[in-house]
Length: 329
Ligand code: TXA
Ligand code: MG
Image (cartoon, rainbow, N blue to C red):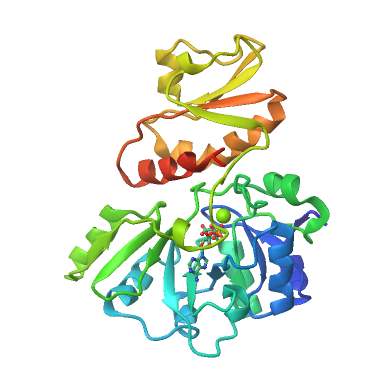
């Protein structure tokens, strides 16, 4: 049962099985967050170290509040303004919370309400939160459509709830909301500093916005590499650094390719992956992981990713954050 409808997805999850589900950011690997056995299967199929906790998905912000300790004023405002949507909230669990199965015993949990009608319907029917790490084998690009999920997981999961292509294409912004005077952007995404400060201004809230991305260092098992194809990939500053004469892949923006007179399909031995135009970061983000996964289908022994200057706006920062981690060991 590779692709499933909502009723089949509900049935499989209730049985304690793992399925993939769509969200507006990327696809997730779903199982009942309160079922230790089902959660264990997610760690196994994703090949994820057991000390790397799982993000939990809820039907609404009201449902989140049933599982966590009372939140501060700005968090309540953000929950109302940003859910459903591409933001996740690091909060404190209630003592003896049934979600501890998902958080590896941690006292905190990352909570998200995804903006996808099928998945909201799924969680509502289950009436229980589901875990939802990105649907990729650890280290590989996250999946943004059912085909990518099936290519990575095949028969290892019970199926994928088919919700088409993910609209945004990069994972949610993770917000550490534990300090009532400041908020910390732990992972950049489609909600950035400017969106947060607009909300704080509108509600007359004084909150310092930090962008420390600390959690890649603080969570064991959350280290490089990330988002990487299987093909050997090197990051370079310019094509002049390539010493090979043929048989490689270049990954760059449309602007870089044009400036360097590199055209798609002009030379069989040098293949081009065009990430898109920097004028349209939404499209670059939406296709990013598909482009990274595509590297492996081109049958080339080596790929070069050009390091470029990304705009310092919300999506530019999110895209750069992902690309910086590709192929690094
Ligand atoms: O957009 C998203 O957030 C997607 C979709 C499917 O919702 N999910 C996602 O999950 O990106 P994942 O597991 O790939 O990324 C969540 C990150 C992981 O790096 C994990 O280590 C971290 O959040 N994390 C989860 N729970 C945590 C906790 N209690 N404390 C610190 N970090 C945590
Ligand atoms: Mg992930």
